[in-house]
Amino acid sequence: MNAKLIQRAYEPLEKYLAKGKVLVIYGARRVGKSTLLSNLIRGTQLKYRLDNGDDIEIQRVVGSQSAKQIEEYASGYDLIIIDEAQNIPNIGIGLKIMVDRFPDLMVVATGSSSFDLSNKIGEPLVGRQRILKLFPISHKELNTELNSFDLRQGLENYLLFGSYPEVLTSATATEKIEYLHQLTNSYLLKDILALENIRSPRTLQDLLRLLAYQVGSEVSLHELAKQLRIDIKTVARYLDLLEKSFIILSLGGFSRNLRTEVTSMKKYFFIDIGIRNALINNFNALSVRNDVGQLWENFLLVERLKKKQYASIFSNDYFWRTYSQKEIDLIEERDGKLTAYEFKWSAKKYKAPKEWLSNYPGSDVNLITQENYLDLIL
Image 1 (cartoon, helix red, strand yellow):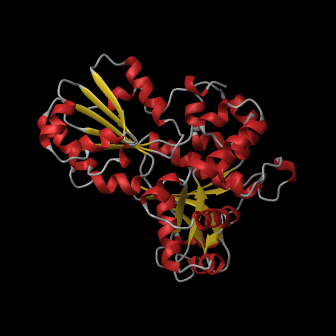
Image 2 (tube, helix red, strand yellow):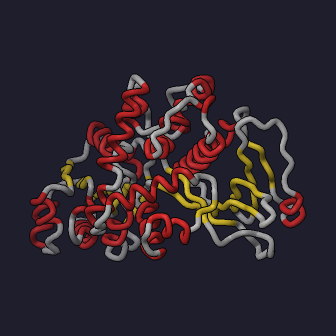
Image 3 (cartoon, rainbow, N blue to C red):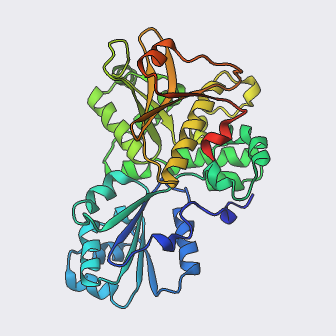
């Protein structure tokens, strides 16, 4: 498969540009932000300049806070694109100066982490920015090239190797595994380590491995802190950074204050299931695994998230569990309505917990299996 031929959800990107505004694109490293920018440049008639935030001279000029220097840098262009903009100091002020001095200018800034870039641009660009989040390739995007039959045929590969663009283009399982290990060991934590002055990369890796084994289960910060031999505040900070770097996502417990409902802990999932499998070094076939239910739940949650993000469908998302171990994998709260989803790899029948039905009688309850999962994520 040639991932470059797959139309990404935000293409053509030009439709998101606006004069006097900054388009901010967030996403983990290697999810395709640079390819998105290349495709924009290839198709535009606008006079543009493309720079990278890793460039020291660009850091000096755009981060200077000097109106004269920044005006000289931006003069004469219709479109300015800055990739990896989080590496530029005072980037928010620099971008504000550009759009203030040139009201017809359009600007694109990308970042592989939101924890630093959003802090730098948030206040200076209030009302002057639009934010897009880019994920590894979604099933919705794959569906532009592959039909439902093709997607079902490839399901085991998606559950084992995920959907980073370079994984999808790799010809063999060995190549996919090598790439995922390289990504996990070399690139994934780069921004956190560079920007947050974290002294122990090993602790972050160990934390991710612990989360990988606990996918689909409620996570105790106290237990994580004990196992890692660090304090609970540090665990909470690391989890926040990993989430803002688009490596993991969290799901909180749903409750309308029923005394039997669990809300104190969160579940954590991986934005890409291939990264999860690389962390525990397990790419065995589904037929010999004991964690297929975890893979299935993670896969469906994330593909559902991608679909909603790209379609601008907004909901509050939760899991639901009682102290008596009755549970539902996903609760979506949207427009005052509750929709419940239970994910089962092979179940034929499902009976929703009585506690849920009696307390939330107006909600929809859906069983998602291999038979109907494409309806949820396409």
